[in-house]
Image (cartoon, rainbow, N blue to C red; front, side, top):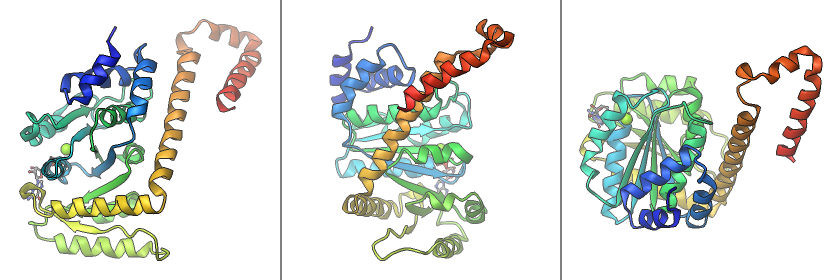
Length: 314
Ligand SMILES: Nc1nc2c(ncn2[C@@H]2O[C@H](COP(=O)(O)OP(=O)(O)O)[C@@H](O)[C@H]2O)c(=O)[nH]1
Ligand SMILES: [Mg+2]
């Protein structure tokens, strides 16, 4: 059994092994999950969670690494969660992330964690928010969540962030794709990376046009800015930080931050409830009770399940 209070204490001092251990305890739903959550809850809530999303190769890891440097320069402690729902193993993409973030490896003010598998429990919908909470409680001022753009899961993970940054790059056909995928709705800040390449201005213009199409904004509404960067050289990154701080200030002023966090908490409770329910029902295919259901008594079991569900809801 892990000594939870000691782990929490060490995590707050920035000890990477303690942070790693706590994340393992919460993402794997260990028997100590409740104890860990109870210890973390009063310490969490101070971190600003930023999602960094975009197609593979657009420069998410490079940008995230540059953002880490920028936040470190102003003395912030930073946590990074690199999530790749497309890869069932710790595969090549995450390895590349490691390399691109290796300059921060010896910095105790930075903690980097990759998460690849969808396999466990409620999958990333469960694991990602728990890991974010650990980083938050461990005293990170900023948590950057890098996630590749693949369908539903990216929206799911973007929903974990206070602010979502959507990255595009010229020549990737990203603009049109983004519009098709309805991704334009999830960005609070847009970044056209690889501005050293031809077509960056055109991509920014196209994006600006598309964002304008959705214009039905009231005067006080947030208008997502578009920032051009060359992440590989750190250019434009300070402007991204500035845009993030502006968005955060706007959210605080308009009560949006509290509202987003409340919605997030509700979603988390739902995930936990659904996961627990799924576990209780068990693996139906390997369950002998299924035989009884088949032999005619299933309506009774079904009523029992319904009752349990209404208990969850109520
Ligand atoms: N030319 C150029 N290449 C970049 C820039 N930013 C990142 N890259 C390169 O793009 C490739 C993919 O970057 P990466 O950060 O791994 O993208 P990710 O898959 O979105 O995380 C790498 O070879 C980077 O060196 C940039 O601003 N300009
Ligand atoms: Mg990456």
